[in-house]
Image (tube, rainbow, N blue to C red):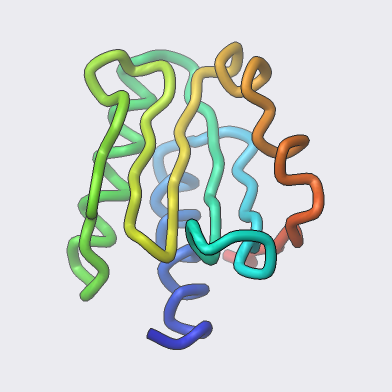
Length: 117
């Protein structure tokens, strides 16, 4: 999979989150920092229902591509849903959980990517 394809998947995830009113959406390019993934897409929802809807929408939109979900974590709890696609990891948080874990600070050396819709 080439870098352009992975970026397009991150863009699809961003669009999915934006379409359901995900808040404070950030895209971090982490490929030069770790082998975990190439991109993190991070967003927050205002309720567990919205967080689950955001995750469901990302899954539905990426199902239409040839990128496959490898693992989903935290869906039943609904405070932090992690969708692991291998080269792309999507994090959907409650505001409080996002502030507590502060991935953006943890990955401060990552390149912040701007997505144009």
